[in-house]
Image: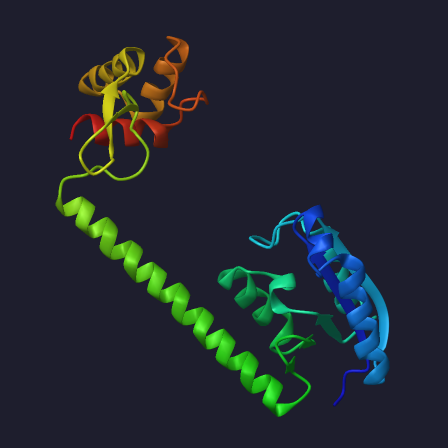
Length: 234
């Protein structure tokens, strides 16, 4: 066992969790007791209060804990349970790849994970394999679903210039698209300018000068015109 200096991380997603046995204080007490019993130097305990585990963004406490590892202040991260770290399969895989596979140890009390040991590394590898399997399975399901919709003639992605998704839905819950008069005019003008032989850049300049708006209100660019022409001619 090489890791002696660890940084603790605790998190609650709502203030109500303070009464459910997973409060920040309760988590920190468990970490300190474990480190004392196992002769580990707990250099700090970083916390995120009222923060969801669905993503890593906005997790200032976790960022500080990882920064301590980056700075060499600690060589391991300790949590009371893996779901305090993250509930996201993708984020867990990113943390393992970025830190726990090679750069730092991971200790999770409730899950009996301690990557300083061969058994702990085995458990982590199994979890990573399961995480990767779930990601790939989700991709396969998404790809198959999109292929099915495309085969049925369903237009995928956001509505193109000239159209918007209305409130009315078909039998499968998909919203119908409706024409947007002002946007249709922009498409027709772009097609007309193309018929006159203007380049994509020249068409963009003319549409900009004539006050036609893009789908998102930005400036007309040659690539924007290309996409509009491709959809308008379809």
